[in-house]
Image 1 (cartoon, rainbow, N blue to C red):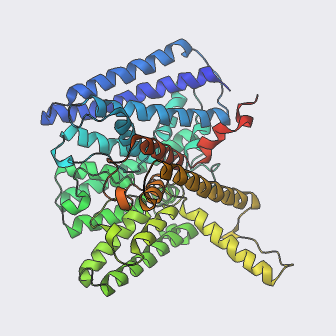
Image 2 (cartoon, rainbow, N blue to C red):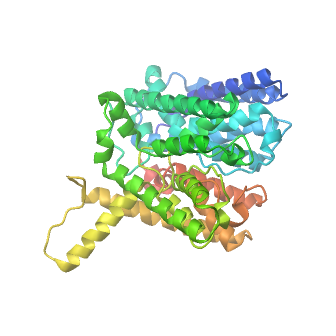
Image 3 (cartoon, rainbow, N blue to C red):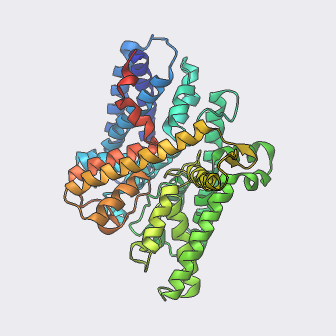
Length: 482
């Protein structure tokens, strides 16, 4: 383990992150909301700590190993959450406690969207902007951004990219050099954000709201500048734009990259994961629409509007709301919540276990049924025309097993803090899947939970963002052996 080079990288990344305090400072000065000092102090503290970590090891030059990448990734997300919480603790409004500030910061950076804050409409504009910016930075992963910068500082980045990138197959690169890969991903991410902001603005949002909501939409985050979320605007056009960009942001960015390079859209409909993803959203929307109409919850047109928005928002793990789905009739709340376990596609900003894993599990289940009928047959599992190796399938099943085991353990621990069953299991599911809103006591916000429960959910958010194994590998004694 190269601890000196790890400290050097951590110091550099913290100094880079300190720069993100400058835009909210500018917003605070523009609106004169009195919160500029919180960001100025946070900027100075983060920059100073990063500098003090970097100075003693600034001349170290060593190649990164894969295990170094895992440790840096986990360390940085943990330290980043602490650094990101500083303005929330230092500001006079809302002036969160240490636990609440860490929870809110980590929720933003992991694009979970679970919040402990209420009364958003009366908070300083700069604090509202800052929450949205946290989600935008976390959406693609601050590590991937750093990968585009670190090679210029003499630091290789592929190990970091492999540890940070979601999905079951982590060795593929969009371009021959990882630096170009990271840059390409960010160009696409930035382009989608700008397009989304312009769409919102044209549809009737203020420029401030348009920028803020574009950050959390493309990041699949769910933070809003209003307590009522997207329902605040009560605008079908805004909701349609939001649906479109939530769906697009939940798609593998590798497909967007190919579309950008080749100037074609046909490859989307040749991708098995994309087709399965759209199929899931369509089927769940149709079921929700029929259930809402039959139960006379809304008028038919309003039922379609509410169903389509809430299904896409919850299934992609965004977490925006235009209706209180937790009180919808029949099985709808549970069905929507379970859909979030699939989440977005691999290589997207969405959370959950990723659609491709669910697809592979279903395909392997189908193969096992065929094997019972034809015991001697050789039946490969294929995605499209491409056979999937047994190593990948084993990794998928391993991930699925550990994911559910972590869910059960955290549920038991959370129940031990005194929460009721519905609140506990939905809170764990909402944070582990990086969804945000849950059921029961966390349908609206997490502010009334005890501190012990909040720290458990912080761990769940981190595990979900790092896809469980990136964090759990650090707990293995084999990881620390030379």
